[in-house]
Length: 421
Image (cartoon, rainbow, N blue to C red):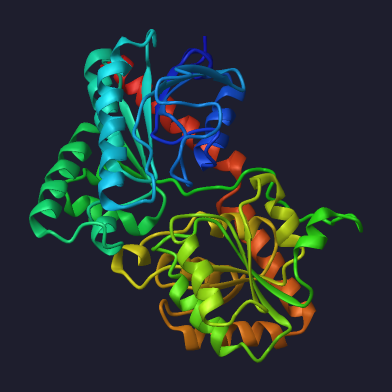
């Protein structure tokens, strides 16, 4: 029996994540990929409530506790929905999941577990139930980090107390020591994790990919999306409308270009800042050029992108955000569309390295307006060339199958090491 037969097709993996289907996160696609490759996969997660802050239709605090997603058993625990995203509601949301996952997770009929895989877009407290199960199941833990703590707490303004941030730092150091392998979505995460006590020999770069549905598409003449999108030059933002995305800069740039009525700012998505953005569009008189389309299924995103002239990604000017690669960058690159990026650090570096668009500093509306104007005046052939450069870069660095091959190898090596010891 070869190594692949011994470890891949019989390995039993438990995913621990506060977020999972029907919430739209990259982990859904990754776990489906592992299932297709023969792994025995289970999921321990919470009741879906992101991003709107209320439980999805068909869910309550206490049901359903068990579902099947593409042949994968999904075990759910109660949690308090995040509501309007206030500090108190987020704290209750985070810690209610931890409490119930630690309490209920061990009594679920999970059976033998060979490896525990943690997915953490935020909060890092999701690791605590996994570490409890590590002790009970004697299984190694692989931790895929999407967000740095406590840096992200201070950057978004969620926590300002130095005492609380210090307590979170102690918790983070404890978590790093308890994980057998830490996967990071950005190479810039390496030094902060090392500084907080993470073993550099157990930190590996594992970036986000994009679902296979993110591809260049050609729409039918009667496509629904054509009726929704405005006419003219469209700069499209798709994703979470939150504090980190710095919509103040977007709206100010839109004000600066208000006289260019053929330039449209298209916002697709939802989030806790949506009501504020909506009110500001009216207050600033931007109704003609800023279009809030609301939330649409992820499957429709490539179709909206196909009708866009450029795709927009923004982040606030904070040291933590300069280390992060927003996952929408991979989606944008895969769809072969030019990108306008108002952010610093790793995200900007990737777009520049790929030749996939224009970048400008974070929180600089004047520079963002100039970049949009430059893209608008650019020949279409040049914009198409940028898009194709982005697609080529995606295939070389972020392609789904290639990354899954890498993850599979690391999982087998980690399990083999545990098995031999």
